[in-house]
Image (tube, rainbow, N blue to C red):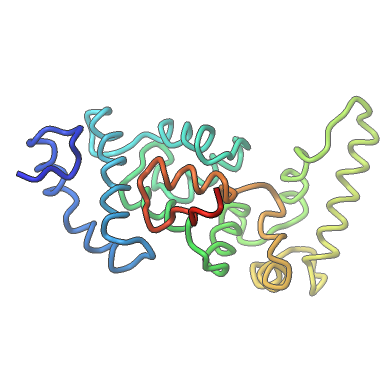
Length: 220
């Protein structure tokens, strides 16, 4: 038989096709990825699952990818992303795996905004209130002078609400966030990095053989 992955034996290749054939068709039809891209991504997922003796990845395995490949080191952000893409926060399904790569590689700003806001509000709120924003920006300021640090945090919180709370009701709704980010895309991740940057996305594309996402050769 023609093996999809030469590092897997015939039985493992056959099992892969049996398990993922319908998902390959579904994700090829519904995402920006080519069929080869989807196969490559699901092969990587399959190998993680095989290593577990399971049909699922563990969140610890994905956690390590955030740190090593995605260039995202904020553990609170990682935990929130994992909670948003998984059902139980402990295991990662192939659907969750593909959703993560879809949102990480999409050029659709609306989808990225929706995902980012869901991550920022995953503490149980549907809007960003001062408590949520205050906790998020604590990591931006640190030092030996507690009074100065607290003052800087308070000033930043006031600045962000002056910027994003356009109706001045004391909370930041998605519509307000989206309106600002559409005009200033650089503010997409204003409460912490969620998405890999271009360099890390290129690394991930090469490591996972996502050919359609390889950068143009003249960039390197």
